[in-house]
Amino acid sequence: MEHIRAQEDFDAARAQAFRRAIVPTLTRRFRGMLSMDKVLKAAGAEGRADRGEQEIPLVRIVGSAASQGKASDFDPGFLPVSNRTRDRWTRIYREMAEGGELPPIDVYKLGDNYYVIDGHHRVSVARQLGWDTIKARVVEVQTRAPLGPDVDAEALLRAAEYAGFLEATQLDRVRPGARIQCSRLGRYDEIYQHILGHRYFLGLERGQEVPLPEAAASWYDNVYLPIVDVIRKHRVAEVHPGWTEADLYVEITRRWLALGRAGATADPHAALHELLADSRSWTDRRGRLKIE
Picture 1 (cartoon, rainbow, N blue to C red):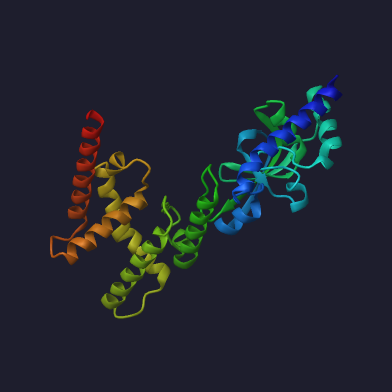
Picture 2 (picture 1 turned 90 degrees about the vertical axis):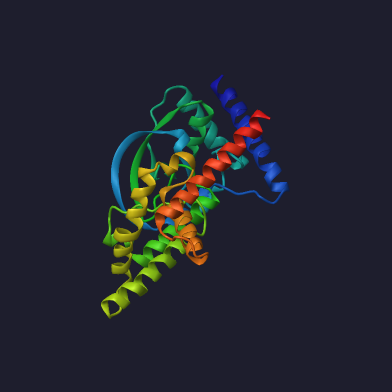
């Protein structure tokens, strides 16, 4: 009975994988299983630590750390896409459905997510059986750029930008507690230009060239943190949901420079109050539109 059910569930899983793939394939947007190599290339590996055996949530297993051969047998949701896996998949299905003791899978943990080293079939079957968790041997990999729970193409680009920013400025070395996270692409380069400007004026003040990491630390202490303190004091993030403190820093400095070019009072407080006034005006307009 379990043998028949396993065969039927395998066919159902393959059909589901096909339905998922057909539309993006026709529109030329198909992507395979997320590769850990791509994530590490973007975020930058820093080190690893053995975390032992754990029960991990299946929903947080998002990709593969194995060779392309194993990974190509499954789609991004670990549904089987190749008929060559049928015998092994159905055998594992019967063992797991009947309560058989299988060894833990092996995974790397990056941020909030897991990437399978060994155990792709067990993950696929566990998902098909409706399990919430699976036993795994976990090795945690630290990355230079932090990774959130949602790792898509844009998130990888942001991680790559942040890793490049940190490599250039060494800010995470000179200020280990610093966390500058932007939600939009291109903003790390803008912040990098601020640091270069700060470095230039610091060099004029000291009469000698200042190493970039030292300038980055000075910028963080004397420019970034004071503006972030003002952002927190006025609760600016509350009227800009989805914006990080670094996003707001960039917006305030843009307005600060624009005010200076226009000949108006130019300082972070004036820029902040302009931003808040614009936010309230937009909120009021949106409220009126809803009422009307």
